[in-house]
Length: 447
Image (cartoon, rainbow, N blue to C red; front, top):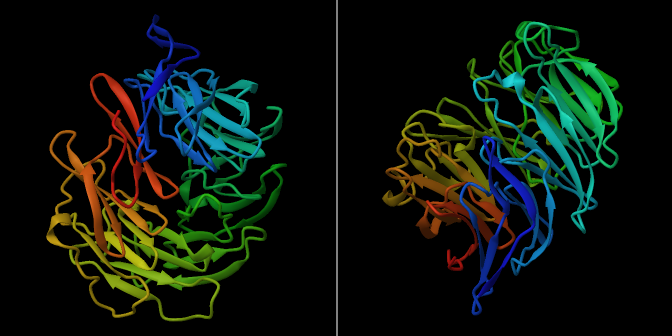
């Protein structure tokens, strides 16, 4: 069935060492080839799928697994990661490097007191190339070659900074004072952020003075600046292998959704909004040719930023607008949206009928209240909907072309697409379990 393997790691809870070696067990079903991995409770972070491998933080280590068999190919250390006092490790994978950020949880301290450890390993062998501490860490983005970290100053004397680091060597490439508004978006050759390029003490933020800036990701050089008034820079969802071709900005001043060129900051187009809205939620499909955006109101709309001006396709929701950013999805020509009453609706995304998307059967209408409310995950032509239940109960429902394929008990974490399969992370009182599940049938290996 499987075998036990371990490597040196140091897990601590307070000053007490939990265990010196982190055991994991991989079980493989002989007839289906599906596998599951079992590790000590509270040790697993979300997996990252890159090509034929799965990269899985396990306690204070990173394990590289074969995607098809679950075989452990190598294990390397993650400096500064403790599953009891750290956030789940953030992993970015390139052809040559695996970039891992371990971020401490600042108990009884403000968010700007967070510290992080950067560890860079070789993708093929798991050998550590370098590691370094990152003080006053807030968040980060990376294109695989350059890592940009946002630092938030501590106390009354701390300044906000953006720093660029070379991934291969760990050396600092550039630093500049910058007060950001919102989160760092996905990085491309140009880092697009909204804020003020000035030295400012912590919490001394002036949202009205913020502008949209474009910086060269590698050198930190300012390329362009745009003032769009009271606005929000939107980081649209997109597949991991797509480079952002447009920058989307929602301006409440002129009630428009603007899309800009990331290279120059020049306007490519805009969509007039009939009302003064809260921040829209974006989904980008068809390699950026089609953009869907939804709001807290009662519509989900489609626009084509690179095509000739046209009337947007609109779909009305029955009970108010979207519940969360993850409350709508587009997959293989079908639109899925969760309305304000927690009901999931679906319909053909390319039909401009101006009415309601047809409801799914009644079994899927009862979302209810939960932190997973509205969580939809797209994987090719599949959509996975997490339906909450009492306590830690609930169901995971797989959908395709507006219809249910299968359902099973909901996992602890949101599903991770893995080719024609999906990875589910579960947790019980004794262990964490990662299971490879067939996307067509919902079957998985037994732990």
